[in-house]
Length: 468
Image 1 (cartoon, rainbow, N blue to C red):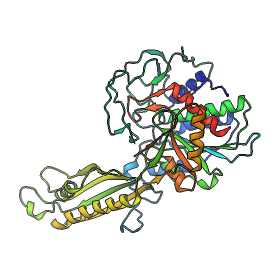
Image 2 (cartoon, one colour):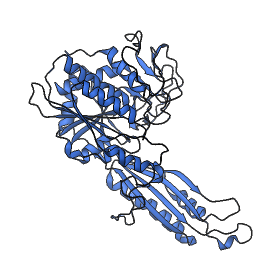
Image 3 (spheres, one colour):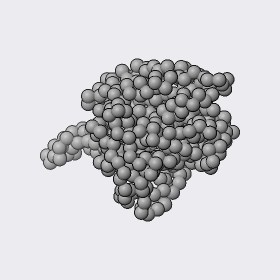
Image 4 (cartoon, rainbow, N blue to C red):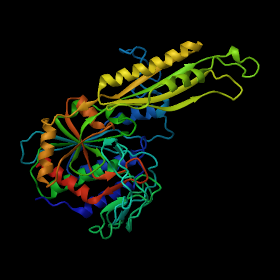
C-alpha cells in the first residue's frame, strides 16, 4: 500500500493558507500552485479567463461574459443573463484557470480528471491556521437540522457552539507571504493533532484548500514511489465561489478525460453527491414615478409598494422537497419624503429539477409584473442560469469506480443530495462523468470552518485507489 505523508499533507495545507485568495483576488496563490504542479512533474498552463474576470469585477462585463446590459431572449422572454453590478470588486487581481497534465506512467487506463478551486469566501484574508487535538465541534449539541452545512446536503449535523480544541501549534504567517521549507516550521506534534481550524476571525479556507492539498499529496506520492497511473489531468478553477465563474469560461475541449472527481464538498472522505441543483439567479427593477410625499403623493407611482406586494405573495424557502426560492436583497428609494421611483430586488431559485426551477422563475416574474401593473409601474426582469441540475446514476462509471476506491480504502461510501452548486455541474454539462466528493472539512463559509487531518489522509488514499 502506498504511504501518505501526513506531516507533508498538513504542511502543504498550511502553506496554502498563507495566501490571501478571496474570489477575484487569487493571483499570488495561483502562481504558487503552478510552481507546485510543475515540481510534481506536470505540464502546466493558465488560461486567459482572469482577463474576463477582471472585466466582470470592474463592471464592464456581465456574469455571462457579455457587455454589461446585453440581452438575449429565451423561452421565458426578456431574459438577460447576468447582472454586472453584483460582481464588482475593487482592486481585483484575479487568476485564470490552471490546467495541468501528468503523463501516464506504465498504464494504459483512461485519463482521469481531478478538480479543485483556488478561491475562498470572505473573510479570508490574514488567515491563521492552527492545529488542534480536539474536534472544534466537541460539546456542540446535535442540532438535527434538515440541511446541514453550507453546501446544503440532506443530513443531520452539528452546529458549532464554540471552539474547544486544544491548540498544538500556530502556523499563521503574514497573509500572502510565502515561506520556503527552510523558513517554515513544521507543525509540531502533527501525529497527535487531528484537526485544523482558523483563529475564529476568518474562514479557514479548507473549502477548497483541503481538496488542493490532497491533490498535491497524491501527485507527490505517485512520483516519489513510482506508482503506475493513467494520464491525470488537474483543473484548478478560479473564482468558483460566485457561481463557478472561472469554470464557466474554461475551454472544456482541452480535457481528454471522460471521468472526473471534484474535491469540493464538506464531510468525510468517501462521501459523494448523488444529485445537485439547477441554480437560477434573478434581478428585478421596478420603475415608478417620484413625487413629493407630502404635497402630491398621488402624483407618484410607488415602486417600493409594487415590489413589496410581489415579494409578499412569493412563496419562499422550500417550495417542495426539490426546490427553494429566496429573495436576497431589496434596495430602493431616495429619501423619506420622496415617493420612490425605483427599486431593485435580487434573489435565486434552486431545484433538483430544471423544469421546476424554470416554473418558479416564471411565477416570480409574473408576481412582479402583476403587482407593478396594478399601480402603473414598469418592470425589467433579468435572470441567469448558473447551473443545470444533475442526478448521478449508481451505474455511472465515476460512481462505480468511486465506490470501489472507497471500499478498497476500508471505508463505506455515503451518497447525499446537495443543494450547492459546484464545478461538477460544469463537468456534467460538458459530457464528463463527474462526482463532487467530500474531502474532510466542515462548516464551510463560516469562521467555525475546520478540517479533519485523518479524513484528508483517507481522501488521498481514495484518490490513490482511483488512479492506481
